[in-house]
Image (spheres, rainbow, N blue to C red):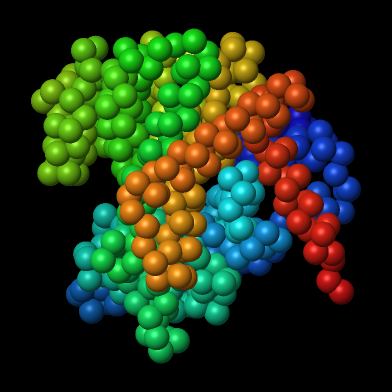
Length: 420
Ligand code: NAD
């Protein structure tokens, strides 16, 4: 793996380096390893948008299906100006491992449009989403590839995608996307499922290292769909959330932030910046505070060689995908920091997406309690599996989780055989 490392590794290099580690440990066939390093299918589309002023702007979108050996592809749709094809490839590969680790019958996919959604009106966002959906229509579907929300998208985006797909095929197909509004066949518990899983794993990880959850201190980077509810669930478990950041600023309070008040403030103003119930703080400092638990829940690569040695949290639970670079991983491991990898920590979202897809395909809706119990049971089982694997192989939780997942995907490939 070290041969691959340079100072400027992007997410795809990181994902491939993690795969290379697992391949070496598992002793996988070189040909299979090479096949797993590249996406099975990818599509890049131009998405022309008629603006509210009548002009046309063309955006670039992607959909990447990394692997289909265990079932249809599954993965989020991201709207961010940072989206590029390599980022989408990396995120699709991580989705393959996440689905395999949680043993849901999916391969991995991801999509994205290079656009800052905050610069578009609601009407423009709807037209952009509908055009992108119609461009990628040939490769998505409830048995092919099922998108879900990610950075910059939400249940409204999924409703537009579902409607566009359904209009094209001539009948309603709720199973084509997950993360839909409840009234359109969404699942109870989906909106906060990723955060519920992050909080569950964070509690387990704190207990694992001997830190009582009640009274533990935590900081959370990112206050969107994942970070906001993760902070809320952790606070409800008795953690003291001492700092929170988003793309526009950060706040801290040694006594603990009032997460309900902060959520209401951020919903009203669009950011946590300026929240009167705390002090402003440099956003980068949120990662380096003296806390028991750090939850990066924003973007990739935020913990890197340049700041990892200043991170003092005893436990890091990755709410975001790919927040820790491999160089940071090595530094944190040497310091004895427990890093719970994304493919385990934030898997609650894809798990309840799977529940939503099952419910949509059967037109039979579960209660909130059904969803929460099954989420808890499967996340706890995956946590136990990863701990056992890490102990057995004497490796980090990330390497253990990746090994478990890669082994399952490689086995599915082997059982199916290579066509022709
Ligand atoms: P979101 O768009 O709802 O929220 C993203 C948040 O991160 C916002 O508060 C934004 O201001 C903040 N942010 C962006 N750049 C930042 C920076 N440099 N520093 C601090 N904050 C920053 O997105 P989300 O759905 O919450 O996704 C967050 C992460 O979780 C992503 O890595 C995503 O891939 C991952 N994830 C999301 C889900 C899901 O169900 N939504 C599931 C699994 C993983």
